[in-house]
Image (cartoon, rainbow, N blue to C red):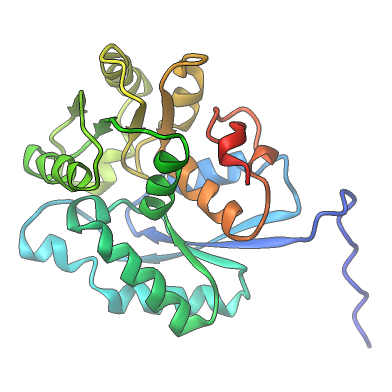
Length: 256
């Protein structure tokens, strides 16, 4: 029997499947991404995991981000015929932005599917809004945070304020209370940066960022929201279809 044709979306918007590469111990990015897409039934998110359990600068922790397991996870997403494959993680912030440029190229070469990453999207956003300074809210350890500040300084972005929690275990990042995240954001806003970035896709900050974002003030950029913005942009969907998650989705400069 020939299957019935798929009913076209009522809105007329073409269906899009977004593929995301996910750290294995991350418990935040999947539910938050689904929440952001809840009102957009023509866009679905699909996830593939590879092993990431800790964030540190020793050899074992850094080896988690070697290309082989990432590309294997990307191949599995390609089986779902997704329209874009994005690395939903922030590792290029301490490994170097060129790492994500190379990863993007390798995913595209291996799968034939366009690719994106959280950090490439973040750099794109900061450029579009003309940011010269970025405050940082992270769960990371002191040495990782110093490396992150240096990475963005080399890219022309100063860090007038930063807050970090000194945690190494990736699963624990997802258990940080909302009140603690909010307090770190408020501390950073006091220094009037061009943007405040919640730099970790396993910190549950998307709704908090939207709630605390001052109208006309610094843009608050949650990493999970940043990754979704990059995916939507890559497949030609205006980010403004996402409502309730801050100016990252509504600002005209970020809606090509």
